[in-house]
Image 1 (cartoon, rainbow, N blue to C red):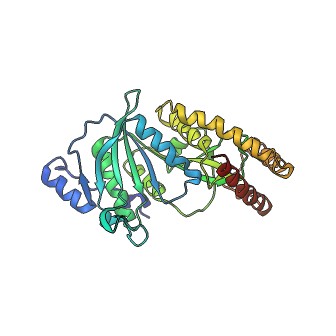
Image 2 (tube, rainbow, N blue to C red):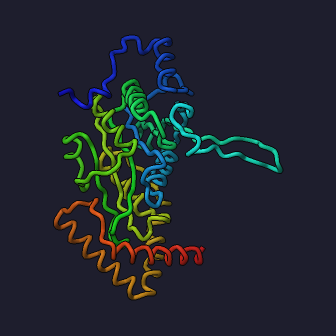
Image 3 (cartoon, rainbow, N blue to C red):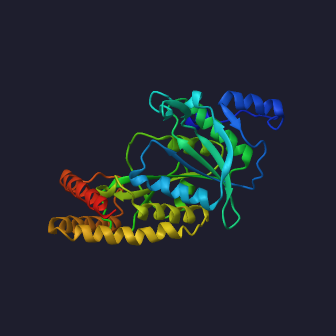
Length: 320
């Protein structure tokens, strides 16, 4: 039986550095380069494609902090016509007094930057492709090889029956046992629909580029609003996995303020305090038993969480 990762293996391209070969590759994969030869030294690729699971927008907030701290600039974009379903992601028409001034399209782009510590970074950001996933995986892994990428890390967040009074836990996914053993994050055993980040893990792994996904658990009763604690957890997890470190002081200060407001809200009703205490017990027990972090909470917890979520959102609206 053939190796399933063979589908990602790239053919030898002895003339890949020649302009004609590069042009042919760009045409095949729908690549529009803004910089022909970006100066990069063993960059790490960080992926955050919107449209898949990102509870509380935690990964989006983390990638925004990273991109800003690294002063990233565009390197290339991917052809929308190849990868985007416009019926699902219609361009935004900017209408001003009846004048159609512009169309804003959903575009996947690769950006380069450098951390304050001097490490080169590539960011893959934008909407998750709606189609041609295998082609996109080959495109990104081809570019990763050409740019000398040494590791790929994707960021995400999912709702979970966890209390806001505990640090946000992280879980990990990777096709490599060696990569899994290099981090301390929780590991799940579950069959779930895959996102493009999971596809890219296999595409990178086939090219012998270490790849992993870092996922933050977000309390389900705050998953529809901002939750900076999960964003900070992702940044800390990225530091453990790659050594990349940014201050993100503004985001870290938001964690303290947000926690204080949540505490005040929950203290107003004894049933909410009781639910949080129950979640704390379940959380602490799960850590002790190293249970599956992707296991779904029971219906009672979710119903209570939905009620609390509505009240919390109303509370935050009143405070703004």
